[in-house]
Length: 118
Image (cartoon, rainbow, N blue to C red; front, side, top):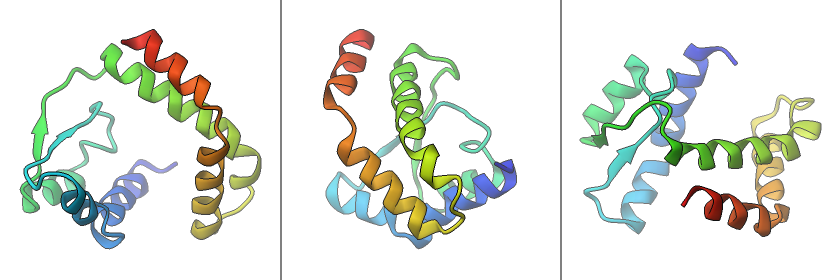
């Protein structure tokens, strides 16, 4: 995926899809953003957005073991999604495919990941 598109898409999802505002409604409005310092998370556009929205950021090492569980979880989910989603370029189709893959994902796998990285 094009890194510039990915960064712009991340900011768009947070802002236009209302992810940030919904998260703030559910959680405390003084949330702290924890990220793995991937280029998409540290792009100028996304950093400006987070600054404009007063999102506090937690400094975290780029290859921390804490994120290994998250990355492995995403890889498992991506494998389940890839068969159908990469053939489709429609965002709604991709969103539905990811949602369905998450719902049918074996929870034992996630529990094992959690146990492994605790």
